[in-house]
Length: 338
Image 1 (cartoon, rainbow, N blue to C red):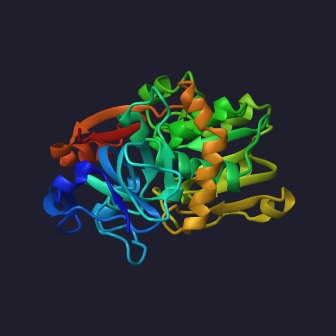
Image 2 (image 1 turned 90 degrees about the vertical axis):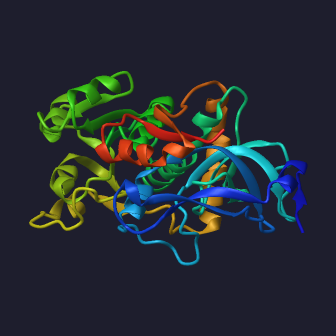
């Protein structure tokens, strides 16, 4: 059994967003459903805001492979108030302000979140800011720090530097004493993150050449890449001995041809990558623990909070997706329900 807040007793139904069929933003619609009940290890969150992420867009387009048994409702991160807790939940109580990495279902007025993927919202952090934390911070922590093992004194190159993931990676690196470079697609974007990193407009400059000049041909230790095949050769060239190349997406293509692989041996390079949705609950719990210990204290000081590009209301979900589709955003797109 689970303990229910008074408020939820009066509310049995809720609105959620569904994808009627793969396609454009017009395939997003609303439906009324029963408010979900938390399982033993879950909390039920009354959603105040939720973040929009690239996987949501790919899911809408029919291009994102869904894990078995998860809700088809999109939405990987929410922020709000706990209104019910499962019987095994011990870290959260009704009334707590939280944000969490969902297993889907975030585009809704209520959403269940596993306790181990839920974080307390620090004092002074808004629901909109908190809604933009889970997906990008979990992804960056797992890939740049756990798998990529980036540490103080090293240099990291982030492709897609103005994306939600990119801006988060650059902020965390800066806070943790790691030098960065980033590639972006316009001079406006270069200017937008100039206080965070050395940004390079890949349309007008060759990022390999710029970084070689800046580092005296020293290169970089870690590369976070969401572009894929077109950058592989230059990525391998730029990595130092024992360098790590970490993939989180292949938005520019997943098939690489004619790439010389000898450097992988000569420089002892590691090439790895991951997706968040395929990870087990235990893995996600470990990532959450890392964030609680290392990063939550920074949020409490007002540091390392996500860059919010634009917020939309719940009835503007199509506009919110359209804003992501253009690719012009710097930071995160968030939808505010309350």
